[in-house]
Image (tube, rainbow, N blue to C red; front, top):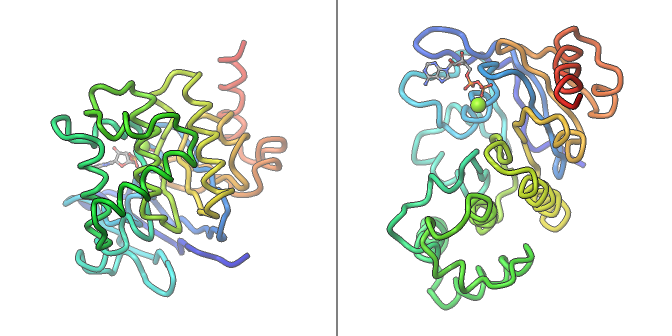
Length: 259
Ligand SMILES: Nc1ncnc2c1ncn2[C@@H]1O[C@H](COP(=O)(O)OP(=O)(O)O)[C@@H](O)[C@H]1O
Ligand SMILES: [Mg+2]
C-alpha cells in the first residue's frame, strides 16, 4: 500500500486563535482513519483544511497537507475546485441539508457530475442507476425522481453517499455521517461506507464521536483533544490499551452510556 494523504505539523487558526496544533498523520490507499474527540476538539477543522473549506476566518498557519505532490492549503481556489469532489469527496452530518429542496435528486446529481465530466443525460442515467444498484437501492428511478424532502433523513444521507461516489474520488472525508441518524439507519450507513472501501478501494477519513462506528470500520484512529493529537495508532490497540488519560476518559464515557 502507498500513502495517499499526509498531514505534517499542521496548525490551523481562526482569526488568529489556534484551533489545531501540530497535527501529523498519514493515511494509506484504501485505509480508513477514524478521527475522534469531544465537540470542539478540531475534528471538522482538520478535514475542512484539506478541502479549502475553512471559511474566511480560518487559515492553515503552519505545516503542510500533502496529496499527490500537492500541498493542499497552497492551492488556488480554481485548482482546489478541480480536486474537490472528483479527487477528494465529502459527506457531511446531514447530507440532506446540502440538497436544494425544490429540485429533483436527478437534476442535482447530474449538475454535480457535469461540473467535472462531460456526459450526456443518457450516459448519466445509466451510470447513476448502476451506482444506486451497486449500493443496494431497490428503485433508483423513484429516488432520482424525488425531491429531497420526499425522502427520509436516513435515505437522504444514503443518497448523499452515492452522490459523493458518483465522481469516484480517491479519498472520502466523512464528517459525523451517522450522528443525526436513528440507530437502524446508522448501521446501513456504516455498511455502505465499508462497501465503498471494498468495491472502490476508497480511502476514508471518518470523523465520529461514536466509538462503536470506529471499532466496526477504522483501521487506525486519531484522538484529538483541544486541537492536539493525544493518541494515534491501530484501532484495536488504541481501544484495548489506551495510553492517554483523555482516551481512557472517552472510552469510559461510552461504557457509562451503555450501562
Ligand atoms: N468558523 C469558525 N470561526 C471561529 N472559530 C471556529 C470556527 N469553526 C470552528 N471554530 C473553533 O475551532 C475549534 C474546533 O472546532 P471544530 O473543528 O468544529 O471541532 P469539532 O468538529 O471537533 O467539534 C472550536 O473551538 C471552535 O469553536
Ligand atoms: Mg465537527
